[in-house]
Length: 501
Figure 1 (tube, helix red, strand yellow):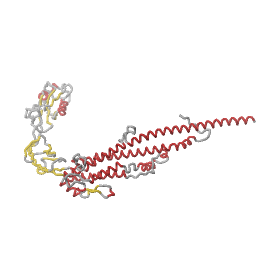
Figure 2 (cartoon, rainbow, N blue to C red; figure 1 turned 90 degrees about the vertical axis):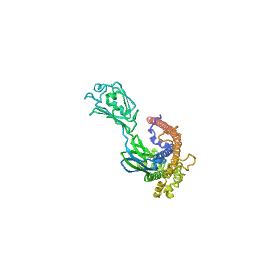
Figure 3 (tube, rainbow, N blue to C red; figure 1 turned 180 degrees about the vertical axis):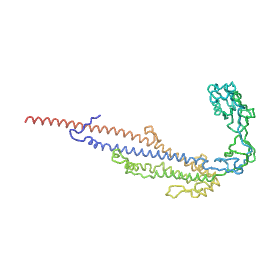
Figure 4 (cartoon, one colour; figure 1 turned 45 degrees about the vertical axis):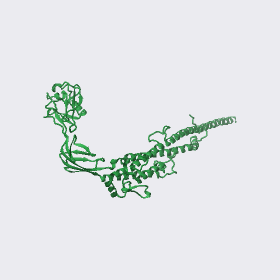
């Protein structure tokens, strides 16, 4: 630590003098810090554009690599429309189904033959041990319901908690009715799914059920058998355990007895809307990339040093840095390559075995040259006709995976774009690394290594500047001491001459 002495002897402002002397020495440091700032801004721009690319690729474009996004179907029910409801999915086959509902599927039920309470004060919330005298006796703490074994502890379990175990551990729902003192059971599923015997009735095994809860599957007065749905589909009589099932990709729900005709067709409107969305999202993302590579670079607006900022207002700093940061990725080869790949994919044909093998063939065209590949739906009727005539070709145009060969002729447009953007994102990672990583020697990205070296150089320069500054202060201190000594000697001699006169 250098003791810094003010200019008491010389009357000099030593701090100001040293500061002026250090300005020239600080020039290399300021330039290095400016260079580091530029690389940091460039790296941040890569991070930002990478996030936008990730969002477009994974949250927007990805949907069009799947058949379902462009395979919308719709189902219309005629006849006894209330007899069935149908939910079409992308995998639903186009066509007609005649469905006659003869009988609906029903769940098996059962309940206590009489009140289980031997005493009106029975409390289902209290432990079974405390309520044992108020119920018929039972010897086993284990029972089976529909073949599922359930164990309870009378010392800690109440009737309510035992019923909760039935509800959570078996395929049966149970509840206690305090008004009648009876317990009701109902299978969670309709149809012949109960076990393990005839599948019609809920099976009960264990004296807690048959004695304490007074339930018996053989008591047909209380036990109601499950029933499968009885229906005729396109003239074929068949059954289903559930009133809701899937056929030819459609989810069909039987609601009442009656006859209906279900017609499934391609939903042209939804497919058109999806393709319009593809065009809009593509144009928006393409513009994002083009704006970035065409952003103006203001080379006269170098990053501000800390000293320069002290003489400026916040708004002035903001406006200056806005220009300083501009154009960090101007003409960037990776972004330019991504733009080129996207535009090539958009105008290319796809070997899908159809005349509808390009965006142009379905009414989508690029604008004029100045619009840099922007897409327009020029002929919606042409698009609708293509979807109606060959919906599979439209799906393949966007979503075909190809045969796995090196050529991409049979790969869909969206799949090509999806793959090409992955290549660009890998290039970003190699160049800038991953956002959130520290700039240290472990960051092997190109810009990360540059920043690490700059940061090391800056720390070394700052140490050197401290040493230079300390040297100046030592020199001025020595000068101050010498002059102070000289002044003392001069005063002494002067006083001697005065005293001898």
